[in-house]
Length: 352
Image 1 (cartoon, rainbow, N blue to C red):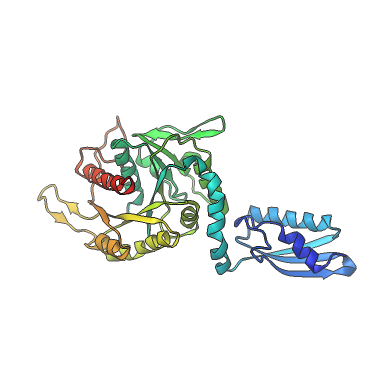
Image 2: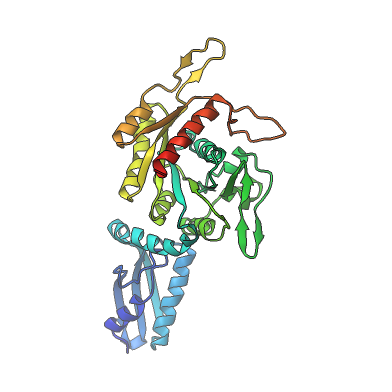
């Protein structure tokens, strides 16, 4: 009959499906119970996330390993690893795996656009900064990594879909920007109800399976806040330059500081802060009205010890049915000029 040490050795060789470390390395075998008279073994296993398809696959691997060792019946219970263990292993595992995923993009400069909360115009900033960089002659890609709140295709007026050639996804090119988004793979604007691990695999595809070609910059429109997807992306990228978007309101800036803190914690460079919705300028009087208050952007930049890259006023881009891109400011628009100034500043910082 198998003993406890042999059980721990056999099961310990299997890998946590999310951390990609063995259960022995994560101390994931928390209990072993053996009933010799029934040739039965029960194990309790701790992994990064429970209740997922990956857990079921690991369960089958445990059963196979023990039955191949002569055990007749197997009982398995799962629990989640403590947070301190996740913090210890998650980043290094994700980064090691990412080296293969990101290998075709070795010479690309990554720019992540983050915010502490939704509704501050992060995606609008992402789209217009990408277009501004392209207008300055740079080869630009844009990943709509806001999986639950994808909006980039609609913002840029995309009317076509990506195509697949020889198992490679060809991104849509619009206004000089190559882009990919979850919005291309969801029918009729349906809500995304997938679990975190499945979403992580979608992001892997956006890096691994998209034929980006030659790029100077790859922008990522991150999900708002500091949830799992945003954290996974931070840990996946070997080096990224982050722009934090806020509004002028002090509370919005306070929340946005969390996004900046995540970047710092994962050893990414904060390029600067963009304050959106800074004021509304009346066409009648020409006066600026500070609808959402003042001071949030400069305060956040000071707190993160970085630069205020620009302040974007409230306003509606000019658009027409011929060249429909409802969230993109024209090159000669006053706000379009602000984005060009920000893009020049970004280029100066990253190519000096």
